[in-house]
Length: 476
Image 1 (cartoon, helix red, strand yellow):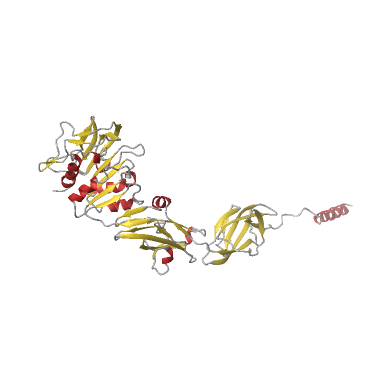
Image 2 (image 1 turned 45 degrees about the vertical axis):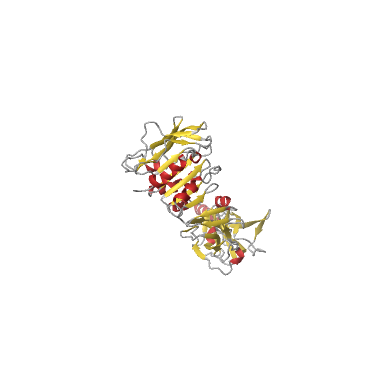
């Protein structure tokens, strides 16, 4: 009986071992990937066939993935080459691509595959093939440059710098270089078929002419992309009415007319220059514009020893400040006059002004040397007359507190400044550095804060101006 019981239990156990039970985990199933392209206002799924028509190299692509037994944690994408190491991982579901086209037209295939939480990859990536046409590059001058000079007559001397910006709808990295040509003002784009262009690399977006000869010119520019396409040609002056003239450097004196409201006494500066220097001097007009590039101001001023800057109220000192500082530090001499303007400061690092405390002195008629001030003389010649007599009531004269120019401090030891003229007790003219009767320091900056050219009663301005040029600004 006991043996039968044991046998029954053994049979029951064997029967239990052979019964059905719940199945364990099966193999991981890879994810699937879906690729989309926005076409017009619709979102269409692409199955891998080549797209009809032609497309530009900038493409925005969308994708998503799903996983039957887990979750998608990211994606890998590649263009054309799907070998190991050519895939890029991302967690994004869209991106913008610039297809690296190298010819006028080419076919490019984009692949994307999902990655699940077990690192399984979609074995059949979604793909899309584009027939891509090349887009020509573009080049332009800076807006401020063309805004100032589009139809204007502009004069430069031997230096002139051009800047530009290049771009390409296929990606800026496809630009391989720029070509320029300097022709005379009669040339047009249609005349460029047989010219020899000068080539610059893709990183060069600036060029300076340093030895221009007198004449009228037009500057032409184009850029080229890696597929061989050229941009439209741009040029300066960029209208038929525009003129760019290069004038010669004459003499060691530069006269700058930067006074837009300089009418009745317009010729007084140049008349005196003509009488003193019949061999010539150089003049430029900055009434409405100065050089766009600061380096051109610097290079132009450094052609000269003396600069007479008739600045007025709408002056261009802000743009030219760095060039003027360099000019003075290199040994140059500056005489300038300006009047008060609410549109601009009077504080510049090259002028002997600390602050302006009276913005519009009431129409003075006399400027006098301060009482007790030594009269500046060279070989018995009194440089500054005791009184300057205005021929008309002077508007926008301002009084200021003098100071050593910030950018020139220390150049002349401990020398300070010299007040030249006052009116109603207010300082209106200063010389820097201070006068030394032993002629140790000649003048470097002479500043008038009034319309000094209208102070020629009894020829007082004429005599002073001549003396400054012949004595104050000349080395022994």
